Image (cartoon, rainbow, N blue to C red; front, top):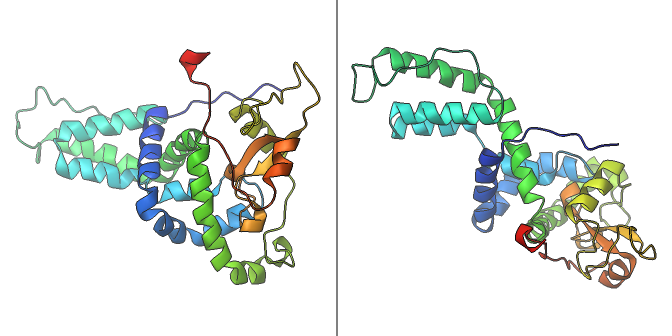
Amino acid sequence: MAPKDQHLALSSGLGLAGIAVSNFWDCGREAIDCFKEEIIESVLKPNKETATHHYLNFFQNIEDEVDMFWKNTDLDKAYEFIVRTLDEVKMKPSLPVPDFKTCEEDYGHFSCECNEIVIQWMSYVSKNMDEIDKLIKHSAFQFIFQDRSFLHDFHLELANMIENEMDYIKSTYPEYVTTKNRLRRQHFPVWLKQAVFYRDKGTCVICRCDLSNLIRTQNTIHIDHIVPLELFGTNDASNMQLLCESCNTSKGARSTATSSINVPSWNL
């Protein structure tokens, strides 16, 4: 079956991903704790809304961003930001357009028609903020999912939280916990296997051997937990990587080995 093409708000997503990654080492634990219950529920088994999506929630609030622009920049700049964002997420409404060039109020637009029109745009953003934020987070995840080094660090921090919350998890979701007080291994759905294979380009991320079976067929595909369940890793979809059988066996249950190696476009 052919992959489903989809419009992505890549500029907004890239901005969010950059903020989320660069601030992780300062406030990653705070962000994880802020959405602790949602994260726990999402990592018991593979879900398309991953722990990293909830982490992105900590940084994404389009209503706050618009309000900041409105208070701290010229009104025309705030309007440009709103339109640019709504264009990206394909949610641009049929609202009046302010004419800043012919407006007689040159300083601030505090009491002119421009102000009233921009407030209508701001109101539209507020009413639709959940959907706008969801689309931007979805785009940001496409970047973060490519960064196995960040995912490694993120899931190590997440493992600390899981270990501390294991009593709660065991009492609330006993069917997902083993007798050793670790999360129980879950079935990997087809969509997850395909996503990991595509991201890692059909190649073992450690030894770089070909797993596509296009040339040689002796290598077996393994979907591996970057942070193993034994180390309080989770079944979160963003905690997975592609390994060959040999590397997966040698990695074992107590290693978090991964790789940031990829193939830059100009090297193709």
